[in-house]
Image 1 (cartoon, rainbow, N blue to C red):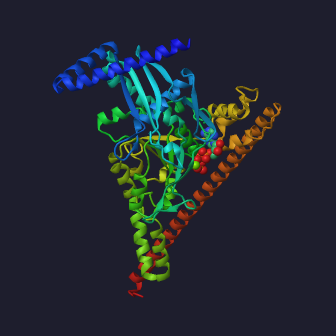
Image 2: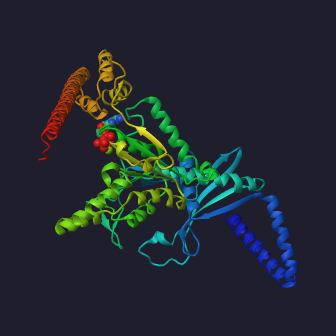
Image 3: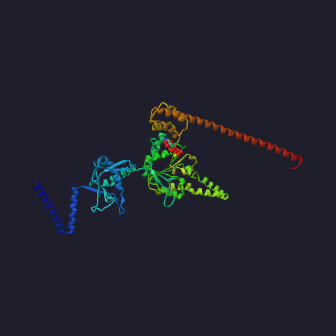
Length: 518
Ligand SMILES: Nc1ncnc2c1ncn2[C@@H]1O[C@H](COP(=O)(O)OP(=O)(O)OP(=O)(O)O)[C@@H](O)[C@H]1O
Ligand SMILES: [Mg+2]
């Protein structure tokens, strides 16, 4: 046995020596051109014998060693494939530090198939040979993916497959990403290097979805369709030459779900939310800066736009300024305080409109802008005309359709004998979804409580109906009293007019008779 092993080593040694000798002879006796020629043909020969192409994707690229977008996309793409495909996986914590994501381990190979074409991916890493002491041993490590495919599929891979990988990888990254809620509001505002407020963010974890949103089912579907059309509409917007943005105006009484709808939209599209507090924005310049700093795939919300600023109308704004000017002339102290107030926020309607119309075209990615208001009638028509606010959505009082969603959410029931009465009452009474939800929240874990909740809702609806009736009666009474007062005033006017006429006639007669003018 020992003999055989020794023999094998000596054979290997002599083969190696023969190869080295041949190579040395080759270098010595053949001119470089011939060497080139022989290399080329030997490569062709090896290509014939080994028909695969390898493509390497490094983690860091360029002189500045920027993290490669392709590497990240491939990583995400493969993490999806490898959790079911590869045998050795490594786990990473992502998102809210609670979910684990699995990806293929180093030197592991997985097979992918796309459009009937087979491809192989492997994850690799290389460490430099000269190991230096470092506090961060992994910093010198180079990570890369290698894609192997048959050379006949070269065009398919470079044209179609890699595009598919990038698209899928980015979509997975968007899904895995922890979304953010940005705010420039007072209290959380942070003063940036050039002064003025900047965005601060927290993770966005609002649980509202379109499924839990109580509103007409048809309307809900229409909104979802509109949002999807927008978010998938990159090519469409490019074709028609429009900036990739869409404006929504949500209006309705307080507690009808306008803010909830914004959260549902963000969850549906997987977008970040920028809650823009206009009252803390100093002027149009700062507004522009804040808006330019927003990222793609985001919803910019301006809540209660009617209260935010003097945005209700340019004409009204001008009128107010005139009034302020005349006050300035009379009382210097009040003029100063007025000036201070004006300085607080000098954002104007035209500043806002200019931004919505103009600069958007310069921003590449998709953005949705949402205004919410309780008083749509107070807004300047210029602000909400189509093209700026493309879709106007009325959030209204809770009707039976919407109630059924809330009953499912809060009580987990689809029907109940009391539903009939609730349907009738909701048809006759205006109650906001927030108030309806409040009644349904009384439920404890006990199933018997369902009925108690519904009964309390019925009581609340009856009380609201009675209150509305009383209010209507009171209004009618006031209206009647006002009308009577007006009629009385008019009658009095008429009477005094008649008496004046009589007096004038008498004095004219006196002048005529006595020829005296008093
Ligand atoms: N349509 C709805 N569907 C589900 N829940 C709703 C709906 N409307 C209101 N609610 C509930 O009522 C609460 C208040 O709603 P929300 O803040 O969205 O109202 P809003 O219209 O934004 O009110 P405001 O005009 O005062 O800002 C929410 O926490 C939500 O639970
Ligand atoms: Mg709100």
